[in-house]
Image (cartoon, rainbow, N blue to C red):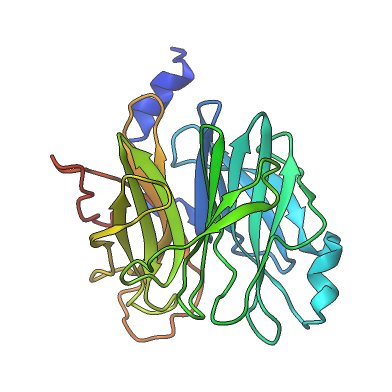
Length: 303
């Protein structure tokens, strides 16, 4: 048996096509110690929980177990709402610790909220900070957190469909509170699910547009020379086709071995364009291509 190092396996397997890779939605993927870790909105749990998944190739995922249970977070139920959803998580690593950001839905009858929990491993478990990090209201839906860490700074992005408003903050050093909010111009076609990645000297802010459960759902992006903008709108890069609908709520990740970029997103496996879609969403992975000017080429969904 030939044994290849992990870097060789990453280079070998990340070009394979085998979509969808799992049930679920809202996938956040990050590389930790040359492995891919994925945190989705869970597909089949009746409890409000989050779990971690690990992969060496972006295709075959092993469920590493639950990392946070909202029933064990006291402040979640303090608003008196009859039901809470565990949605759209994200993770960030800084100074040897891992920070797990998550959405607590729904928006009504009480405002949505975003929490943060801390752990020593990407596999968790994570201990909640003890209070909401951000609460919705006044035309803002507090869902879909994402944190971008660069050097000694970290930037927080969030915003949802109720109000379709993006908010950006600079994180405090503890990564569980804000240092300041950054005033920004709203990116064109923004609905929800912001994600930031950097390639070279360019920062790419990508996000979903449209309604989550119909064929209008898609991904657009804008660019900047700074993590906080100002943003120059570019184009739509991912949209419904003849056989699959509503692709969106995604993350970008770079293969550390090959330096190739991938988008990990969810979609509905149906040719029907009649909303609302029923059943579960599926998570898929596509390779990203950039043009000579650094623009992201439109993404074709693959089986």
